[in-house]
Image (cartoon, rainbow, N blue to C red; front, side):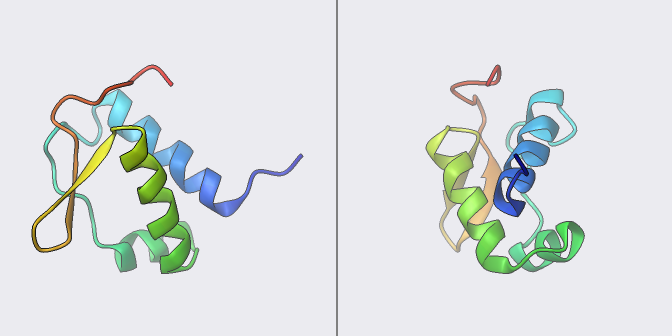
Length: 77
């Protein structure tokens, strides 16, 4: 079964967070930048980021800025 574009974004960002390529507390690129990079819509990126937030891997701070969580709940997913 094919993986959805949203799931591809989730998997890649999760891999980068777990590996340390995106260190804890680091500001994430904008939705537009990620949408361009992954060749998906901003809505797809937004949905992927919402799921990563539910998993405790990213968090939103005032001003709509997204960061990797300082201590992600589950780095082994």
